[in-house]
Length: 320
Image (cartoon, rainbow, N blue to C red; front, side, top):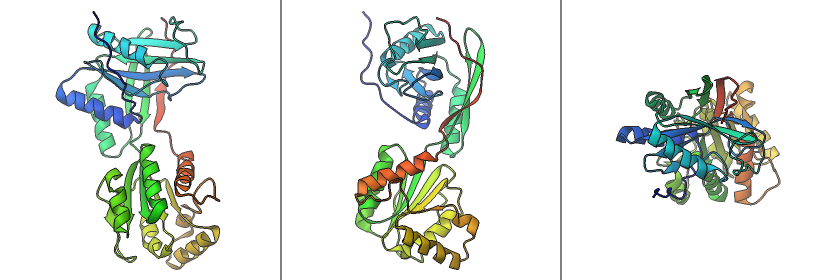
């Protein structure tokens, strides 16, 4: 009698979550199959290059569809671990599995590798820990074709501010999977967001305080969320010296114009000032803190570099 598959599947999202789990499996000596989306056509729930893991106990971390075929993928991965055979499986249009439909249409091809390259996985995990991009290269069976994906580390949201919008921004950012870092002059606000921050929040004690923002890199956004804007200049000057993808401020158009003029007086150059976004948010008329947070994150996300990209590939036309 076959052992039933573990339920539910852990719906880990970002490649770094999957790779971190793989690193734990490698360190503990546990076997696992690495599952990779290698081709999509038409609609798809996940982007090509998305990852998942099924371990030796059948537990699945990550997902490749919106629930319509993940259980079948899990079943094939368990079988691959038993036989040690790599599999390339096509679902949807052109698949032999006519009883497994993709409601979004099109097709999805997945590679199931029961003996993945642990050295490459460990290197990618190291890259993520160092906030660097990395890649994985796969050799597809029958026909033998290479495909390589590049992966970026998890995105960071660094916020300085106080009050309801500050708290909402941290909560919404964390809910979409960003790493959260917070700075505030308000100790109650810091206690409220502390449990969801990646490190101990920084207590701002003076607007003249020198703050090191080296946690901000090219995979980061920085926001100031103050109504008392005296806290902003020093923080913005520090943030503009980083490689942050997005730097933005809360406030009206009039407030932002005044902010720009003040930073000019502090010798901030035009090229740096052009990086500063304000007012933040795709919808500028909002007054509700959670909606302002969602609107702002939507603006940030609209300009993000993809977390997965194809570095090199050949046409993937798996035959069943």
